[in-house]
Image 1 (cartoon, rainbow, N blue to C red):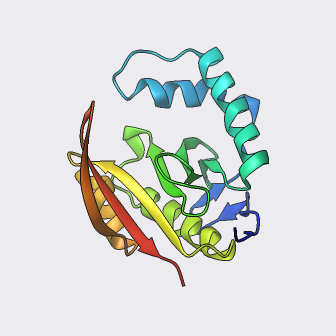
Image 2 (cartoon, rainbow, N blue to C red; image 1 turned 45 degrees about the vertical axis):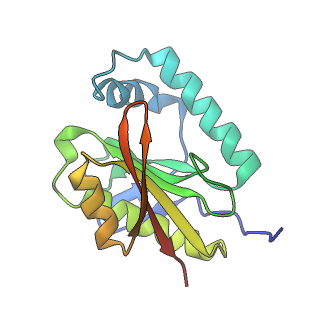
Length: 167
């Protein structure tokens, strides 16, 4: 099995900073998760999630990172690499932003930085899985050079599997 370099956990773009999770992110993380419309997530739930994300990063060398706007200093979501439905060798890129941050190119900007970080680890391919209904996310992935591989049906509907070869 090939060995990969650890992903950088501090990424900066023109407008954004992606950095490791802190316990102080729990309230905003719970608010973001609650925006999904599947019930309110408590701060304690989010805090536990953060502990699990940090532990996963320790063992895998890849991370889902909070996104903070550089000028405003506010938490607007997360972006990073996860095992998700795939493998550590070919992880998934994942992102989620507060609805108020949609439509401004933040997801594309953050995911572009994560894509570069993935390339730097020495990986050859990334995946992403997105609900067929999620046109904005599919557009972000298209801009980043991801191509549709197949569609699967899950309990919550159809999921598009996209892939991107890395240089």
